[in-house]
Length: 87
Image 1 (tube, helix red, strand yellow):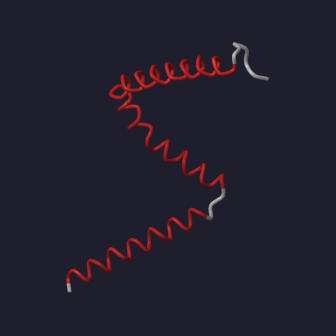
Image 2 (image 1 turned 120 degrees about the vertical axis):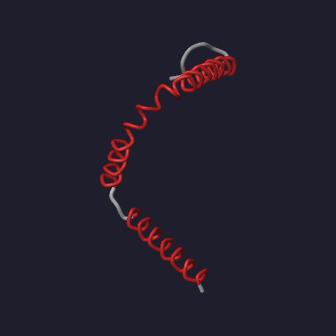
């Protein structure tokens, strides 16, 4: 019976989470954005503490992104047959 009781408790938690999700679906954009900003605000100290740890990865990612964008631009210019920006 213990397993059945824990299963019921787990199911109750799932139902509570479903209700929370349904409530969030009915929020306005402003309410959702307010929640987002409060989450960012609460996570800010952790983001700041981890910034140095992830800095090298972010720099490498930005370098790779710039390289890909440069290659894409070169390819696009070859496809267009000119070097002017489209209007």
